[in-house]
Each structure stands twice: as structure tokens, then as C-alpha cells.
Amino acid sequence: MIFLRHGQSEFNLHFSATRVDPGIVDPRLTPLGHEQAAQAAEVLAGRDIRRIIVSPYTRALETATPIGRRLGLPLTVTPTVRERYAFVCDVGSPISQLRADWPDVAFHALDEVWWPAIEEPQEQIMERAALFRAEMAALDDWAHTLVVSHWGFILAFTGKSVTNGEILEADPTIGPPRELAWRH
Image (cartoon, rainbow, N blue to C red; front, side, top):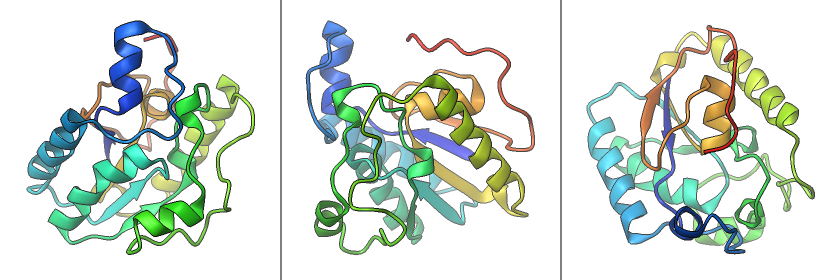
């Protein structure tokens, strides 16, 4: 399967410069982030992708949208692949707002408020990654899946730290990473 970290968000732009949470709720992509999404759509156009799974955060949806259009595939939204709730940017948008912004995307499996109320412990994101790993490994066609996600979830799943717009291949039949470095 293929992981794609969302393009640069307003949060990423400010946080990388200051290392201080800028307090942006569910940030959108920057112009660079939109360019990264377009580049990913171009790169992934030649791959045999049959399923796109995406986090419900705006930055992930904005990244996945041009890819879904390019490949002619719907977006399957699941909070399982969302970011670890640790910063203000990890407060999401209510489903009613997401439905208004993406009327062609199905949000049927999500509650109006789908993100946690408090900071998520590292163990919990590791459990989510393990659950997702098992779900994907059970599919015969997991190799044809694109997952548009976030730094923390991809780290929990693969053990690798990825940059905005970076593409990473992963095998869900391989066990969890042995060591993780949560600071980046």
C-alpha cells in the first residue's frame, strides 16, 4: 500500500518556523501544499491504485481530492488514519461543515465531532495503527490502496518520519515498527 502525507498546511508552515503551536483549527493547505497535492496526483497517476482512504482533516481531504479526480476514484474517509491529537490543528471540522465543503464525498460513518476531546496518548495511536494494519492485511488487494494521512499516524504505522507531500510504500503484513521517535 502507499502512504501519502498531506501537503504543507498553514500549521506546518508556522510551526516549522517557530516550533510554537499557532492555534489554527483544522488548517487548510498552503499554496505549496496544493502544489504538493498536484505533484502527488501526477506521480500516482501511473500506479494501479484502486482505493483511496483519507483522514477527515481538511488538509488531508484537500490533498486527496486532486488525486481522486485524476484517478477517477472516490475518497473513503475514515478517522482511523487521522493524526494523533496533540496540537490545536488536530481539532477537526464538524461533519456538517465537511459535507458542505466536499458534497461529493461520503462522510456517513462519522459522528458530527469525530476527533478526541483530549490529547491522545502515544499508545492509543499505536493501537489505531495496529487495527488499521490488521484491516489492510486482511484485504487481498491492499497493495492497490492509497492512504492520505499524517506524520504521526504514518510514523506509528511504519516507524518512518515523512515530510509534507512525501510518498511511502508500506506492507501491512509486516509487524509494527520496533522503535519510534515522536519528536521531529
